[in-house]
Amino acid sequence: MPTPSFITELRRHVGHDPLWLIGTAAVVLRDGDAGPEVLLVRRSDTGEWSLVSGIVDPGEHPVDTITREAMEEAGVVIEVERMLWLVVDPPITYPNGDQCQYLDHGFLARWRSGEAHVGDEESTEVGWFPVDALPTPQRARMAPMVAVAMREATAPLFTLD
Image 1 (cartoon, rainbow, N blue to C red):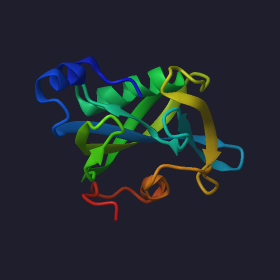
Image 2 (cartoon, rainbow, N blue to C red):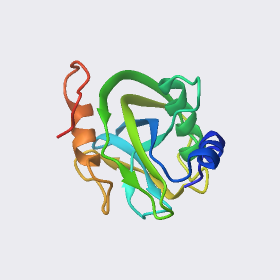
Image 3 (tube, rainbow, N blue to C red):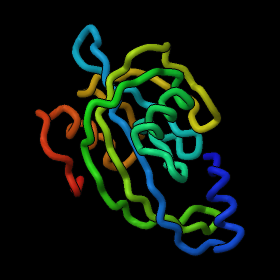
Image 4 (cartoon, rainbow, N blue to C red):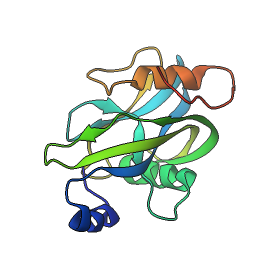
């Protein structure tokens, strides 16, 4: 996955030491013939199906980030409806030794326009899937994240376990 330039610059100073980063993801829904469908991207780095997601740039609002990421990753315009979760993800060590931990903002969004397609090198496939028939392999916690989005509106969750 391409690393945002602000992180590359930070890494020049901190090396592989842990970075605390802000992430965002969206359960993007549309009405399908057989019921609701969710937009998923197949990650080029792991081959797993995943929600549209990204790292928040300095000074950027997480809603603006996920709206931008939906266009960049999948070529679609979305409208964010509500926040679903705010969770601290476990620490990650990437193959190159970089360490990160994310404060993840999750949103429910609706597709508004655009034909879903692979928009950048971060994914190899993009598609709409029935919410009750998610493809595999998939990112850990993706199915619970979709399940949260399908619930009646509630306050945001602070854990997805």
